[in-house]
Image (cartoon, rainbow, N blue to C red; front, side, top):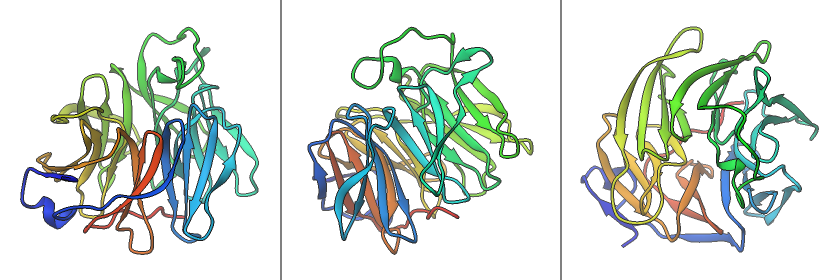
Length: 296
């Protein structure tokens, strides 16, 4: 079976079953997919391959950038630029519309960030990202000593790119997403196998941390990619595939993927195609409820 139904409502969100369409394979480890809503293409990372790739229906898989500083998570900002987490440089970079690249941040105080991992952009232009240590490990990054003594979540201010530490009590923070009204921030912790939620303040800070959900079940994988659809269902990588929660943290079911799924995003004209970064391959499945298109 390609799905595990835990609540009948899953059928209206995902379906009774899904069919996996392989769009590409032979990669080292895929991550960070983002969909361009107007030009109809997907950008995704291959961290160990030091390669960012592009997929479109017309051209298939092509190179977007190589080398990529072992890029991981990506997001579109409000001007249609790509912000990227780089494992090899411990940086958050931005690809301008002319293709040039600038570094937005690489240090907290005088110490190098661990390895920025996943990233999102708020409607006001603020950038939020997680900073676990995975990019300092062999294969997924460049082995080197950790300079910070914590793994945190950060915000980059839209006006002056000031870096703000939001939380420093994660074991390994990873995927993150906002609620539809951006009043709450969800962040998963891969090592602890759960998702936390915070209230977002008017100044962009976060508070009132609490446990929101746990990813449980059979199969390899843990909390990694984390996104919300247009009906406020929360999708999170987890054991066996992609776990789908309703807005009240009830797990409706699991899309059981062919391999460990690090991340995913929605795309195509109706935003009902779910693109899955599954270890060495890229897949597409169709779901019932559309995701959210990038706004720029």
